[in-house]
Image (cartoon, rainbow, N blue to C red; front, side, top):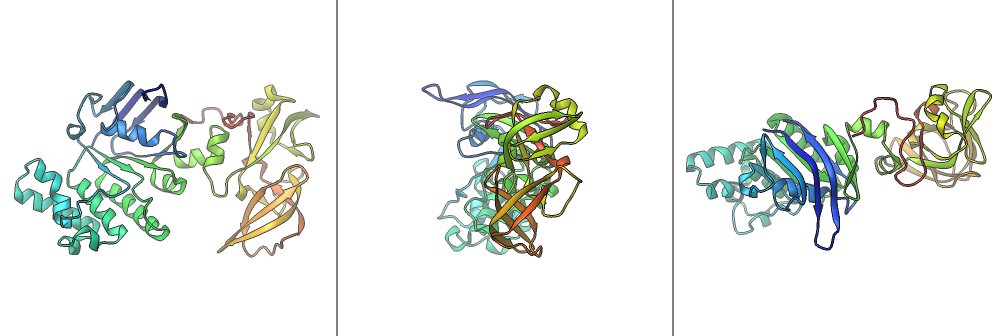
Length: 374
């Protein structure tokens, strides 16, 4: 096990395209960190630079105390699990798992011991004599993970390993990977575009966009205290609601005015919003922080009409419109008795709203002092 340190790392392709831009990430020994973001954000390129499959254009990568920029992948003491499993179809499960050890000329007895131990951990002992074509997707992924485990590397690298599985199997394998990390405590870097995977697996989540780290914090911090509007909108299902308007001070109180409604912001937000007085800003509120029941007194209600209802088991999503904003979504109890076409007041939990500067990357100006965002 070992720490991984990326210091001012960039990747520039021929033609000048900068896929990764001056990122700094410190992955602690035994930590499970997830790189998440939309397609093309640079997360897989970053993983491949750690693995040595992509050259580093600028900056330094360390695994343990060793700079590995010019070290071959096979000499970095890492093991990588790919999206497409990358199993040899003509080999049995046993031989697939053992292949890397045989290349490194491990003794036959040690190879057998490691393969049997890994297959027991993953529950695939009964599959060792089969070939990949005889396995399900989940079983193939377990074999790919087993091939990484037997290496006993300093660092595990996972490149979207669950994206080819169906929804139910993804949830099962996600749980298996988390249990595996708790057991082995190997430093792990995991890449995904799936925010649910990121939030459930990671000790820390690194959100990337256009080759830049937008936020690097615990899953709960990233969700509750997004650094900017992109992070706020990317993480969360359904996504955060955004309202265009401006910050207004009146009678020693601070409001957010979207042109149709004035929403009273908490008094403790006054200091952080003082310099944004009368400026165009964006207010954000998550769907679960909207409710048809009053919560928090006066000055936090908007008038809406319900366009559509989606039932999700014990919860339902209400898709609504208001005079000041269309496309508002709220998540509430499925037994609340709402009807499509109904007019009602929706109340915001004003202690849970955020105010952002305008633009897709507008920063969150209501973060508490000292909040860790990078």
